[in-house]
Length: 521
Image (cartoon, rainbow, N blue to C red; front, side):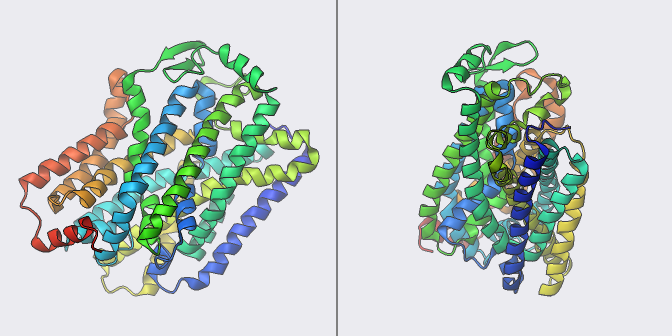
């Protein structure tokens, strides 16, 4: 049972606010369903996004529920260090992605036979007539997005269980159904429009809860006193051990491991797709400024909510079993949101609206993941390999069937109420970052990259994450670093070595690269 602060009538008002939001989301899907005349519009919105929608939908779909639950939970559990360095790495990675990847990918994906998915782009970029890259990409997307989507469904279950005491599994399934319905009906434009709305909701929810938490904690002086009593909690070079109440030094390798989260951006299909979908490449400069303001403020607020929560809700982990402590910490945002209703009963409905920020974060990422997975299966596997002359109608039906199948598997994986949202996301983030990230950078910036190098890099990154996570990291010590860092390096080496050992790209491929590199497209 979750920690409930609101009385029954206040919880009812909060529930009404959340249901109203979910209805609004489904209505948006129905409105945009009439605009999906073909697969390009369903998967990429006809390349019609403006700079504001591009920026806000990219960041909302990127951050997911871990921004409101996973990151504050990490900060609440162990202090500034791990959460802080992760946030810094993400902010830096976001800037580099928008600055160096966005414009080139928008232009190159259009030049490369008007590619509408990331697997499309990789195959067309290297003139992969046998669709090898497309097939591998589709498998990787299917595998890791099932894991990623399950984290969102877990967040929905925790939200309703903590706030209302409803059964975790039942609410997780209902939330998943809502995501599936509006994704199937609305497609990319509905998803991007909803993400635009949800980006604002997430942003203001973080700010409001941070302010409420400071008030509930008794002000900044009381928060400072609480942090002083927790050894190593308020430092970026030490972390707090909840079991021993002692400070634990943070090594340079651990800092690099946390900051390695930023490398993941270069391989995130749901973020990269926004770069491809904007109507004009020149508008990406404006989108970058909007995105960076949102990201820096949101990440800082998320970490501070976890820190402030130690003073506002000091007994959150009291009586909680050690194996469930991390998961319980991830409810700190939900618990602090209830203070609004408990202090100002008439504003209980606002609690529902604010906690819709978690719905927003979850749905904005889950819909992106479901849509991209369906495009990988229908566009890249079904049409690209099995039925090259498949009709638009058949492609759309396969897409929607894929969304349902992925959602079912993800819901099964999310059935454990003690699962860690941050832990689930970190694994999928590493998978995409290592499998696609290095190849994305090399495909855009190194003319000598070959098809053989691309295949080796993608497989190397994919295998590297799985092997490091399950075989090497359990050894502990220096080997216990975040799997994205070593797998990203290994993938890069695979690309370089395999490309140099194989024959250089054809003249046609090199000419296309030069057009993009010289800014003539």
